[in-house]
Amino acid sequence: MNISRRGFIKLLGAGTACYGLSRMGVDVAQAQTYAMSMKTAGAKEVVSICPYCSCGCNIIMFVKDGKFISSEGDPDYPVSEGSLCAKGAAFHALHVNEHRIVKPLYRAPGSDKWVEKDWTFMLSTIAKRMKDARDRDFKVKNDKGQVVNRLDTVMHLGSALMDNEECAVTVQMLRALGVYQIDHQARV
Ligand code: SF4
Image (cartoon, rainbow, N blue to C red):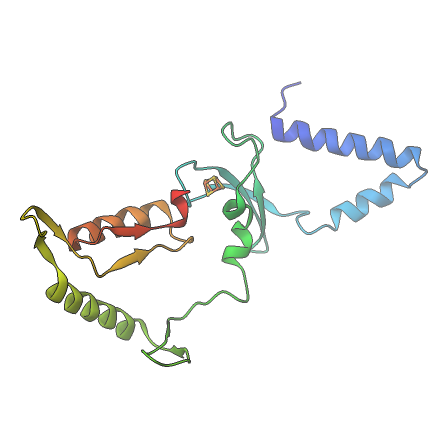
C-alpha cells in the first residue's frame, strides 16, 4: 500500500485508538461520532509555508466555511517533519485573534495614552522624524577621519510578525539611511 507519512500517522492513530477503546468496552462508533464533531472535522486542508524564517516549514491550514480555523505542522515536510517553533505553532492565533491590533495607535511624546490615528498621519510623522534625525545626526566620517556613513541616533527593532520579504526590504531601506543598529526576533 502506498501511503504518505501523514496518512500513516492518521491511520496508526485511528487504529490504535479503536483497538484501545474497544478493549476498554467503549463504543467505537460513538467515539468516531465524537471525533467527527471535533473542530477540524470536515475542514479543507491547505498546505502553506510559514513566512517567518528561512526554514520555510510547511504548515497545514484548516479552512471551514471559508474561515481559517486552525493550523498544525506538516509531517510530510522533510525538514521539520511536522514540528514547528513557537512562532509557527502560534500561526493561527497570530492571524485570528480578538486581541490583535489592526489600526495604528499613536502615543505622543510625554503622553500615557494611545490614540487611534490613520496611516497617512503615522507614515508622514515617521518620515518627518527620520528625516529630521538623519539631517541632524548623519556622520560621513568618524573621529579618525575614516568614512563611516552612519546614523548613530536611530535603531530599528523588527516585529516578530515581519516575514522574510518584509525583513529584506526593511534592512535595505535602513542600510540606505545609514542605520546599522538593527535587531529582529528571527536572528536567534
Ligand atoms: S519561524 Fe519556526 S515554524 Fe516558521 S519557518 Fe521558521 S522554524 Fe519553521
